[in-house]
Figure 1 (cartoon, each protein chain N blue to C red):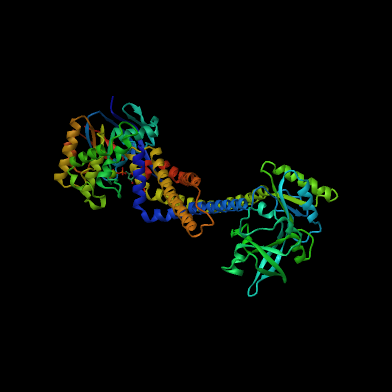
Figure 2: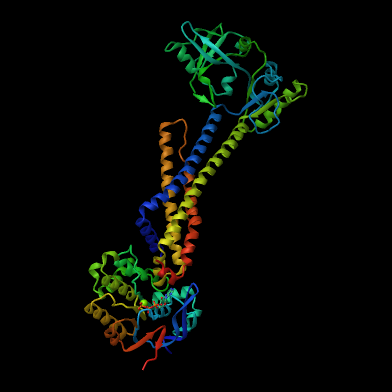
Length: 401
Length: 229
Ligand SMILES: Nc1ncnc2c1ncn2[C@@H]1O[C@H](COP(=O)(O)OP(=O)(O)OP(=O)(O)O)[C@@H](O)[C@H]1O
Ligand SMILES: [Mg+2]
């Protein structure tokens, strides 16, 4: 039986039961739509995070005090660990390392920044001149710390947004601000970057490391950030840091070294898992859609028993009947799946239009699996009803009332 | 060799614990090119006999040989082929697809012809179906669905469908039952014409006048064939 005729029959029959066919398709529309939507969101989230990590700086190495055993993790719990990293550690790394481009210790805490008429609660970050290099910071006005300012001078560099909110149109460079009640001179402003990995540098007041130690009255570093000379030397750099720091810490590894890529990998693993879980949930709705198809096809076979008998009587083989009903089921699932795909892809584009910073547009590769899954659902849930139809005895089918 | 040969054929329908002998030790030989009418009272087994001959059902016991081949040994697909290519069947209750137009109903056997012989183009199928409808004077109702047709018109659609594939054997179960004597006679004319061109025709009727137009008359009573004179 020519495929053209099989298709005509399938569509004639679906058209004759428009409402029923549409309702059945709804299950597939929702199922495929959900899978595509969830996968797109997961995919978008992954791209988003990757971009954020890349924007964070290149070849970044993070050293945190405290030891963690697990390899794939985001480091030790932040906070008051007994182990400490000190400025002396930073100096040692700076002097002895062959693989590092730049090293800085950082301190971190909340504080207030005041001008005469304004006061902002912000994050205060103590660091040195290398910070700019490690995190690809762009200074728009004035300059970042020079090397000598490391030694506790009361100067500050403001995040772009913070500078705007304190000084408006005025040039902040050269102005005085009070950080937690001690006077600091503003020497620079950095470009607004938006939030990176949940950390908003735009609202940060940077101060030299030793100044930060005075402000927070603490000589422990929050952590060390370093940049390897190249991506290939990343592993060597990490080994080197470990050796140097261990040597300084009585041979004890009381710190954790992470690199950008392993952190990204760990995050991506989690995100990937989440994507699969979401896709799995979507799949459940596909199964529900498939059961809907099976149900309708079973009803259809019963309703059309006489038609089956008539077709058999004028020369249809069992396999022609099978083909006819299977095609109908696949048409249902494919049209439903196609509409679901179209709908969800459009939706991701519309969402992207509203939220440019998060690109959740469906990836191009989604089309083939969505198509295959739709066909597969039709086959899987259509084959039993179709077999039932084909197995009917001609004479019984003809006599069926 | 006879085209159709029934030897000691019995068909029993079991209804609960009651057995109904629809056919009771039937012997029948039909030569190629014959024109036979079967008459008999309601319930005597005429339609049952025709279903067997048309390969729609099997005998409970006995042997049915079609063209010398025992039907028991014919595979299901082969039977479908014979029904499509060699046999034209006019059902007592028409058996038209309610959702399809007269034209689509008549085209239906041609759709399945592609399995066995030629694959007709859509246009060719339409031509052949229209030609068959023309034979039964129904061209003007080609696009009507069965529920938009009168009983006699439906019967004629069913006849057109049986003729469309140029069968070798025509099995017609009261094809004139719903027709006035004029239209009935027209159908009989068609059958006679077909018969002249070599088609074997087997016709069930209650009407003795129509039965008389056949060259051979078979009388059935209570599932048995009354011996011919
Ligand atoms: N599928 C069936 N199940 C049970 N009994 C059946 C079945 N088909 C036919 N019969 C019985 O077999 C007998 C013969 O039926 P058949 O339809 O062959 O009669 P008929 O000669 O065609 O009658 P009519 O002239 O009224 O069409 C009837 O008694 C009928 O009740
Ligand atoms: Mg009958």
